[in-house]
Amino acid sequence: MEKKKKKKRDSLKLVKIKEAIKLINQEVNLIGIVLERREPKRCRNNDWICTVRIMDDSYPSPGLTVNVFSNTFEELPRIKNHQDIILFIRIKMKSFDSGEGVNAACNKMVSSFAVYEGGTTYQCTSNFYDDAQYKSSIDDLRKSLANRSRVDQALQSESSRTKAQTEEKFSLLREIKEGKCLDLVCKILHVSEDMTDIFVWDGTDAPPVPILAYEIEEGEFSSSLLVHNLLSRDVLLGFPTVGTILRVSVNSHIFHWVKPGEWVELYHLLCEVDKGSWIGKATDSTDVQLARDERLVEKITRIYDKRVSFKLGHIPFWSFPSPPGLTETDDDQAPFVTLMDIITFPKVTYKYRCIVRVVAAHPSQVEDLCSNENSGQQVLFTLEDPTATLDAFLCDKDAEYFWGLRSQNTDMLRKKWNRLLGITESSESGAPKNPPWIECCILSYYTHKADPWKTRFYKIFGTRLLD
Image (tube, rainbow, N blue to C red; front, side):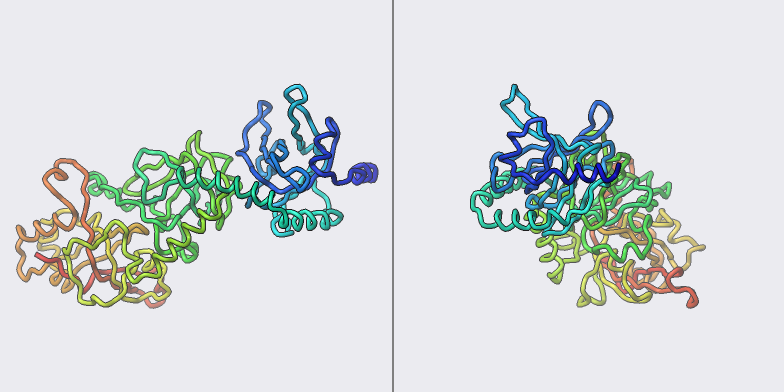
């Protein structure tokens, strides 16, 4: 039986699209270059359909539409580039509109396909067999297409249309707003094992989030929703240290194919704030596909590379042109780093300089800071920048130097405390706080030599809060 199937399969030769459109209701083998891939959709029978438009040197325009059917999402074609080549085996030619139009159907029961980039197969269906006999045809198609200006014009037209759409449609992470949906071109950095969360990045800084008083009082701000608390340090070491990493909560099968390292287009992603942290949420109308405009990806990457090459590239976007001058540091020549730089730094002990916001404090009341039980004026600040949050101690001589008080002056301390934490009369009555950006020096250290990484802590030093 297998020999008969193989013989029948091999009996079909490759045909050009120009010839195939005349073979209505017949099965053919085709090779074509991909012009367009539309987003997969569910059929009435709960199967999937994905439409691609292909062309070859015999039929460059408008190309042939092929409807690919499958009972699993993973078996649908994933096209990385519009110049990739796809090989279809045993697809059936069909007519519609009373014979005025022609398309093809690729049904997994009898059909198969493989997709190529530069002569290398990067995807094929589970029922696809050896393609050695088609290698020369694939090479010939690529060479002939490269030498034909009409093909270049068709591809340029498609690319220009896509670019115009993407430039107008997509936003950056620095433009997100709470409760609003956006379309985003971003890089997948990590996918959780249970496929419920993906972590995306585009090199820009999400805006700072106003802080609600009850979140601080109830200790909810520094939550497990923060990226660096959800992932191990080993995973974080592979992440960029500049730019916000957005956790996207997914509950849909449409994300099951995404892989770390891929650039994707996210459509209609809902952005929310949960306990002081930006998160993205997939809704029923959210969609994802591989990024189609390579030039847009290159532009995003180029902007990021240019940013980090500057001396001030690690400063938060939202602190420019400069922090409001609330603090000064002893080491004003040290390069600025982000909090993610600090978290992933290869040495346990080191000194850093950064620009952050103080979003929470423990104790949370200035009176407790001045109490007899807290003779060293010890306080644990939660620091934030667009990349991470970090808990840092301030105590003893460093605290005395920071506050500039040799005696416990509660009124003066309260004034500085409120200014540092963004506390105003309106925020005391329940309005959100918006702490200012400050410059500070941070020291990382360990408490147990036998296990330095697990006992690594941070403290503020060499920083003074100005009057």
